Amino acid sequence: MYQTNMYEGMLAETVAIRGAKGDAINAYYARPLGAGPFPGMVVIHHAPGWDEWYREATRKFAHHGYAAISPDLYCREGHGTPEDVGAKARAAGGVPDEQVVGDLEGAMRYLRSLPYIGKVGVFGTCSGGRNAFLMACRVKGFDAAVECWGGRVVMAKEELTPKQPVAPIDYTKDLSCPLLGLFGNDDKSPSPEQVNQHEAELKKHGKNYEFHRYDKAGHGFFYYDRTNYRQEQAVDGWKKIFAFLEKYLSAK
Amino acid sequence: MCTMIVNQALIQGSGKGTSGWFTVGQVNVSYDHPYHVPLEHALNIDFVNEAEGPGARVAVELTLDSARRLIETIQAVLARAEAGGYLNEEGIKG
Image: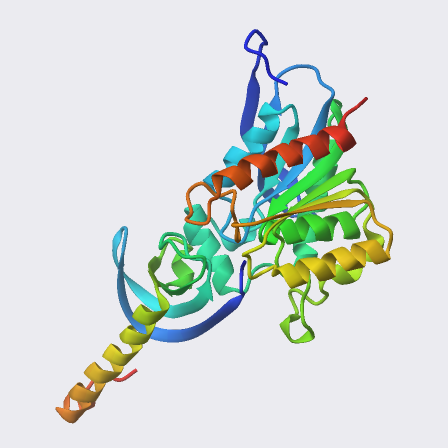
């Protein structure tokens, strides 16, 4: 834990990495200064885009001692303000799961190619939460996953699309690392019933998971710039995230 | 959560964005996360020009009631214009 007499420094910058199909995509990378080793985190932005909140979250992980990378999953949509690019992706019905998996695997491999990286986790909120779970099932190489209110993990058949052809819950048997899930009980997607289904599937396959469900919280209760922000639940949620990551990503 | 509820339509017209007027060729209508209006979901309308990049966008984010009132208002105005014989003017249709 940070003490006031400790040296602290951070490097945060835009880098380019290889994503799906070897495409070059942008990523925001933040790491503590020093020789390391540092645990790594892949930070997955939400549907509204690769925005300021996600840059802050990436730096938050670095502040807590992680080398964190957040790839721009909308990089192929062209460039502009995060809102304009996010609106373009929204109009297109999002980006394909297969591409997302390739981009995020590229981010994980980028971290693992660095000489000072230890274990690697993955974090995301909203669709990023869904994608954090999806990654932890689809790709080997993560040591811990944090899913915050991932909607569309549970999907009805009629919700499947060419871009999202398989409900992530159907990959549960392949989950390859411990999972932390944070959910608001007033959320509609995922609804408490869908979180129950998600949990039941994890239990069925004997997976290592930890779910926390917050009363008086809906969707996106970490976002201090939105009306759904819930201070008490958000503070507790971040505490639980860092305790979980300490447990599974620490070099000890 | 992202609903992924979105429809697009090709349109013709002009929109005024941050850099002034531009030609709009498409409207994207979604019921999903808004960026500004303080709601979890809103009726979002983006008038865009795909060829000019993501910044060529005029956006509105409406509450449900507002969206319905907008539809009614547009219909009412078009009905009055039609009744007045204005919709047959050359160059208006398209």
